[in-house]
Image (cartoon, rainbow, N blue to C red):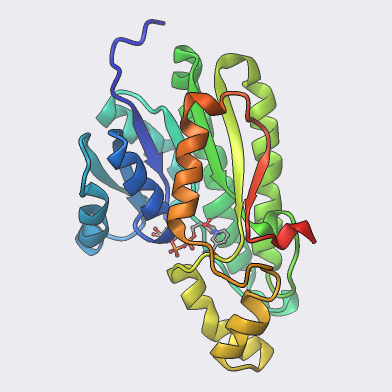
Length: 263
Ligand code: NAD
């Protein structure tokens, strides 16, 4: 198939905040048409969309979808393709966290965490691949976690989900390896975003510690650099993975965790 429209398009799920917002902003600056997604109503995400749009030369459009609801990811990707005419890069980033001992974790939280991160990646990928296969080009980036490679207590649903994301990544990479499409996982350590900020109080309660001690003794304890990763670092790595130079990188998990998983 001849690629007559050189304007590229990206969808970043969960891009109204944190890591996803930084990735969306980076690709907007690179000239992509950018599909921003979150589950909040459009009025509540105006500031995030305005931030992503600074320096954009392509279109920036918001697509509200609750990726925890069934096959919403499939419909989301098709809506993005209907708007932009194509989807070159899919970043499965949406995710939520819940800190609790496994025997106190409400089953609906288990289902919600898995649905938003893992099931939605499946649904988005199955909708994105036909167009990528037709163009013989595409990039899929799944945001896993250091918790896709290591466990921590009280995060059973999150750890299981993020390990699952890595399994999905490897499988997709093998299926499309000869089609110009790559699929990789990024595994961040602790990144200072609203998701981590929200965990502070839960962690403090579960561990019976002050929030300051949680930062020092829990969050940054496994991170040898003793620094939070910044969302922009994940955005730069994503841009590299989307570039032609990364065509031979596929099926792998790239840690950006200050040395956490070196141990
Ligand atoms: P965040 O809370 O700042 O942002 C989460 C995003 O997901 C938001 O845009 C939110 O609207 C969206 N979202 C949540 N539920 C949704 C739903 N049902 N449907 C659609 N969108 C939904 O979180 P973050 O820290 O930027 O995390 C982004 C990703 O990075 C997650 O997958 C997270 O697990 C992963 N991650 C984060 C860290 C960290 O330390 N922050 C570390 C490793 C991995």
